[in-house]
Image (cartoon, rainbow, N blue to C red):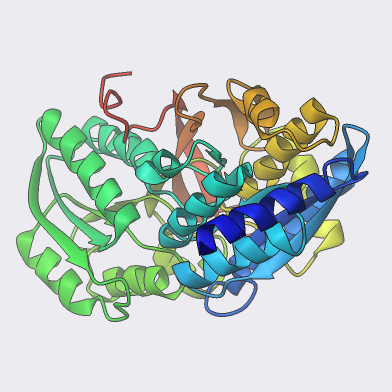
Length: 391
């Protein structure tokens, strides 16, 4: 009965706003708490996108409604999505930093038929939960397979993996291990750290004792990831010749605090603010003008391109509520982003994009950055059943 009532309320909400001249977009983001720097960055990025591209699409004004989700909380994520749809009458949802929250909102998106663009959550299986979900970030297999290929190309033959023990970490571990071992590499040990781990010293001492050529790392971002790099440095692994290969661990948000300990760390990811293109320079300049206090990292383009996809859907539907037409316009779409060329795969609804190997060094002003040194072009989500094929 409650489900029927909710469905009825959602239907009324849909009908009431079908002809609205304002299209509302609800974004669920960590605006407070330990990951608030990423939420603030999304706010700055959306502001920059609308400054560059305007607030009009399909003859309608695009209005963004923000909701704060400070930490992993699927029940609250579901409640916020319901509030945005029923009370705020949004036509589209976006944001969602963590996988468990994205999974919870996926059920709401499916029931209410609301196209939802995930800006960050990176577990491969998320989009299987609803055919109304799209993603403009990345998946961990998408970047972990190139990381493994890079390790093999660098003649690294033994690796220990250290990942956070939840969906994205397991995705990353599985993709890296499968690719690395298939190429002749040996994984000495697979370490999974509880998500709330703050002291990685014992793990790093164990890794040092195993004497691998490298450690492959996935951390969830924020304080835990900073703690991983700190422990790697303090354990003397770099001096011992153990290379650090990761995904997004050298975030620009953390580099100033990490300092020179980050120099030489190698990661495979879909974007660095150091990416050289005119479009990226426009994005960086506009963001700096509007939000000078905000530091951008790889998560920023998830929001930038999330807005691009939403604008595409609004344009295709002329601002009307037509989920099927909106999703059809997004599937198979190709465009240029500050990160490079992008395409939404028409079948999986996943983003196909370049993955860049980056190394931390200093720019001409002495500021730490992630400099791109190698490109793996137009990578799919390697977490799909047919994905771990040579490309």
